[in-house]
Length: 281
View 1 (cartoon, rainbow, N blue to C red):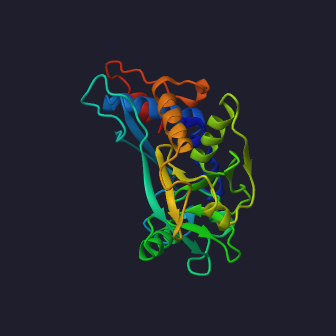
View 2 (tube, rainbow, N blue to C red):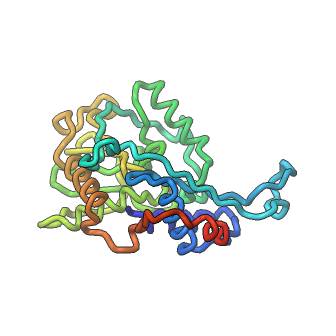
């Protein structure tokens, strides 16, 4: 579910990082299909990594690397009880008291790193640690003027009291969050559609919002019910948060509202796939 947008960003990030991928989107689809079939898991999470490969030189020159390496890990999903055959997928939503963290305290990533999905999480980790120190959970980055950027590993979205859904602009300073983009699509599919806009957001607007959510990884939805001591809305998870969780849960279970390329069909046939996986790799 929702694989195409992740795969495209994955390959684009590899290009930005200077990794010379020898795998196309179709190759990765095929490998994932076969690998999941090998696990026999019906509800699973798939994670992908790509590197320039081993070199043994302990240096930074990718030309010294033997060849690019692709790592794919498949593990049981945490969002459905696979022991129950009739179990339903349900994206959970947490509710937390959150804090903003200024770039004066923890600096932003430069645009090239901010817009590239990589394993460089040093500043993200410092944002998380600073938020914890201040009594928050994940932290919401703001600049010296109070302009909202993103959380440590999640995007930030608000619903205003006028019923408009607002997220920060993809201006190169933040990651193009796949979950935030999917939320916007779910909003557009409502009847009537929920208006969506991306623009500069000041932290004071979050204080006055009807709802504030942080979202990432397709299945992580967190409602900020208090921010910097200011109660958000009625101080509880709201109807917008529930709408998003229910919409994503339904999509995962039924495919409703998604294009065929967003899914990787898995054929759980008797295993005869190892040779073809080796051929692709």
